[in-house]
Amino acid sequence: MGGVLAVLEQRDGALKKVSYEVVTAARSLADRLNAGVGAIAIGPVALDATAATTFGADHVVIVADDHAALYQPHLYVRAVAERVKAKDYSVVLLSATALGKDLGPRLAARLGWPLAADVTDVSVDGGIVVTRPVYAGKAVYRLKVTAPRCVISVRPNSVTPVEKSRTATLQHVVLGLDADRPVARTVAMKAPAEAKLDVAEALIVVSGGRGLKEPANFKLLEDLAQALGAAAVGASRAVVDAGWRAHGDQVGQTGKTVSPGLYFAIGISGAIQHLAGMRTAKVIVAINKDKDAPIFKVADYGIVGDLFEIVPRLTQEIKKVKAGT
Amino acid sequence: MKIAVCIKRVPDTETRIKIAADGRSIDESGVKFVLNPYDEYAVEEALRRKESAGSGEVVVIALGPEAAQETIRTALAMGADRGVLLKTEQRVLDPLVVARALVAEIKDGGYDLVLFGKLAVDDYHHAVGPMVAELLGLPGVSAAARLELGDGKGTAEREVEGGVEVVEFPLPAVLTADKGLNEPRYPALKGIMAAKKKPLEVKPVTLEAGGFDALELALPPERKPGRILGEGPDAVPALIAALRTEAKVL
Image (spheres, each protein chain N blue to C red):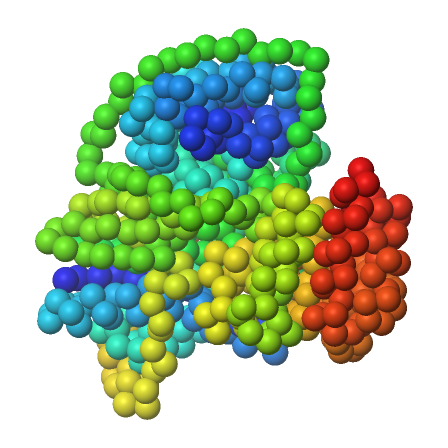
């Protein structure tokens, strides 16, 4: 059995939190396979991957090239595939982010390995066994990997990063690769006017639905999110289809599937396709005027009533809590 | 402009999933099947590109069971010119198997564009499009929410966490469509009638085994019953207390 290679992800030269999740998952899998763990980070020359050395990897390689500051599919695929071949890895683990959802399939195709996409658990039981939610989480597969090698992408937030005492060795290599065929090139990254957390990555998500009555009222949820800190504002399909919120904010079967530690469903009745997207949240809070709304069936805590009275009070109370700690 | 659109027959998103007796698949009785919602954006985009070019052909390709002919007819009713069903009753767990079967069909077709929905709402792989790009050795962009095509090249935008990537590529290329790319048309009665007469070729295919065995398909664990803490703003302190001391998330 060859080792496990964790593919790290960076933005603006700094590693993203999902990178630590992937290294942690790789270490945990490798321990059960009695294998080693390598990690690869691809990014600009200024990329600092030191932070990844304490999550259980044996070796971290930084493939640096200023042409690879943004995600360039052909460079990234080639860098990882060459590393896999050079070190004879058996498993490639990456995060099922926007990048990983493109890079994972390409790697699998390039290597000719099966892809277990967007898994929430990886275990070993006579071979690698993965847990994959399907139908947006309405059902869950347990799949045994029968191929000798595979690519696995892990859903963000499904692994808690754990620091280890071992420290990985760090090696820099210069990429110097260029395309050997016509390719797509990422030429720019347009950032929103104000940096905002993505619903799929945030540890707290505050989502709103039709109960908000009009787009401007999402300000109430933004205030609550701000009071909570590190929270993203999500939305139901109804309000996204109505054009109140961006498509990227939609939680549900035709939007994003999220697994935050804390999820607020505010003015959301809980259509089956919305519940599918958020039911793996650790704690769910529902605020709705209809006590029979389906959302209360999945919520851990509910408050029945007028969200326009409840949410401002909640924001105020959260601020008090935060000020006190 | 010759465009291939790869589509899939999937259960409607309002479907309540039941597990079949074998414990490894869904019970399809009473399930309404539809054209995968993301594939509608791909079909719509293909039709618009052909319309603006003034000529061309839109070919829809599906891999699936006999009944996927209906799904292809839906795309034909929207305006696609002809369909190909790669017919198999095999259940596929490994997206690479699907990608390879599609590539065998697409590779000598002389397509300028190959379009997909960004994912199928049943298996949620988000994989077959980029795999096909890689296997064909063509430029690929996944989850495009904006697309501009010019003379032999194009620019796409795709949403990533906290930003939007702008991607330039030469044609031919493989793209997968995200919600927001366009507003898909509904098939008109005239289109539905016309679709019945459009060519639909059925080609039986035998798929590779793939790299997985299904041990189990199960419903997700039920969430523990929660509780209503009260009515109106007066219930807020009870919620704060529960989140702090019981759930320990504040």
